[in-house]
Length: 469
Image 1 (cartoon, one colour):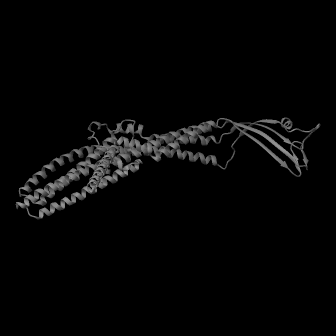
Image 2: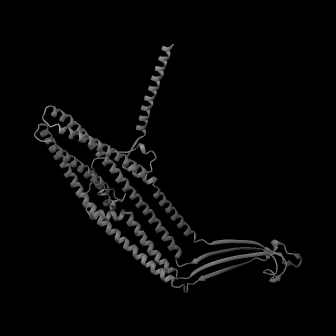
Image 3: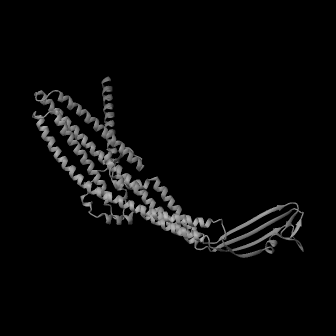
């Protein structure tokens, strides 16, 4: 009996262990399935669609559209109705009898008023035009906001790729140090190298492990930072795709003048300011319109009831009085501004200042654009040359390190000379990675399709982001 129970217990134990292993395998497989590697374009599109600032700016554009619709509706007439019912006590003047009464009376009044503006010096049309120009400027500002997000996402994306390469480099350094450790141990046993070299190599292995862990932790923080900006819910399952090779085919030899002309057509800041200048010009005209007369047409109908009013035949019915007391009027109103404490003059002067300021702002934007384009264009050329030079340095540093390593193993060089060669190789590879992502970033931003995302003016903000690592 005891034997049977023991067997059953072991069977249950095996079943539980098997279930746990299967569950762990399933969970790991499920995480691998759910984990998605995002491309740069996917990160950008997701960020734009879910960014709160862009959504708020979109709501502002919708509000501007409603303003335009309402300004168009102001061309229509206005119609208002009024009805009141009152109880009067004491002595008062009855408007229907045109006599004083001391009795308590019940009065009712009903009226309709309509009015339409016939002429206002084109004020309303200008107001509608200003709103339409403001809407176009708002849409372009939203585009500028999208470009800012694209710049931020691109920067963080390339930082993560750079960090991944740093991890791979740290792994290679650790593997190199571990291999050296085994070889040095053998050399010490053979008496070819001093025992203190063993301690130096072990210390280097520990430092390489620490560096690898630090690089991994930095990568986790960078991924978390990007996922937070993108407003992704499953942050632990977030990762990015590796970048393609250096886009040599995308690089173009356009001159700076051609790029500048293209940028003037595509930059949202430039186009938005042009709309602002046009709006300022129309606004200036509208201030002068305030000095012109305004003509409007009004119509009014009125009727009422009073309990004090009597008929020859006796009581005067309620609705009969409404019919008999009916009266109407049509009025033509002409409002002529004569003197308003020089407010119109002040408004005209301020409108001129605003118009001049808008034109100067556009000139400043264009000058800054050309200056930044020159710097960005030159930096792309330099980055191309720097990348090629650092690649050559890596090749040479690798040969030097291998030659120094062979001399060390043969007992000609000491460990200090080997460390110097190893550090030189590490520095060369770091510089190569740095130049690689600098070049990728500059080419991708400078060589975007004509009329698409206009980011050229922002390049200089990103030129040195890799140098902070």
